Amino acid sequence: MTDPLQCDVAFIGHYTKDTIVYPDHEMVQDGGAYRFGAHVAVAMGLRAAVVTHLAREDRRATAELEAIGVRVVVHESPHSTCLRIVYPNDNPDMRSIYLTSQAEPFSVADVAGVQARAYHIGASVRGEVPAEVVRHLAGRGALVSLDAQGYTRVAEGCELRADPWAASAEVLPWVSVFKVDAGEAEAITGEADIHAAIRRLAGLGPREVLLTHRGGVLVWAEGHTCEAPFAARSLAGRTGRGDTCTGAYVSRRLLGGSPEEACTWAAAVTSLKIEQPGPFRRPIAEVEALICDKYAQ
Image 1: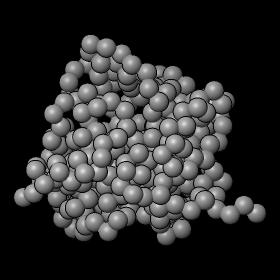
Image 2 (image 1 turned 60 degrees about the vertical axis):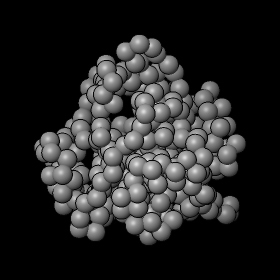
Image 3 (image 1 turned 120 degrees about the vertical axis):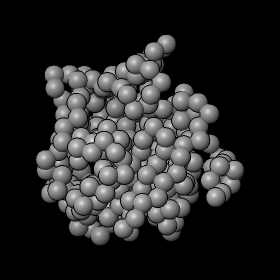
């Protein structure tokens, strides 16, 4: 019997091949929540692993993570998940996403060989990581982080749209950190005000809620909220913002940081990532300097 892979944090989700359309240009890049999150975890000194599904032709996409020490577990699928992401303007919360192909869903067997202190489930569309996988991971006693996009996004034709996710109350009590953006929070709760929405989300059962919006990060934990603004000088790398933010928040919590400290770190790391396309590749010293400069109070 093969010994289980041991790590601090494991990122679970499909590889995505993303065609990103901005108002003035278009680009294709390797995506998936795991890619952005794993880069942050490694930069913060944690042992990271990835469990993903992709087509054989896209196996080369894992090389960059393996090069920085991430352990990658690949389950091959007939097709990779391919997305077309269209930003009509400079608002990072305003975009249209189209699903052009999809990899096979995860099963409990797919994660059986990975032991971690925390698992982040970063799916792209409902059905990718079923509820039984969430419950199985939570049953191990680990921190389980879950991104709402993999449960509120459903395909209507080729376009992904937000759905209220009626089954949320069956899943969220198993979740340690629930990540949402402002639009997802409103879709689930019906509340346009982010402070009202985050309180409603907390009532559904997760221990902590991490909400990103255009201006920054809002966290509910231990019965109260805290927040920190973004301090980015440009929006050139807005794709992967939420995945980076979650990776930074979960990593800081694993390192012993309080929810308030993790909120600040998440905002600072994400601010630096937003300035450049691709995953976070800045020295941690730059994060610390930004925190001293912009978040000291």
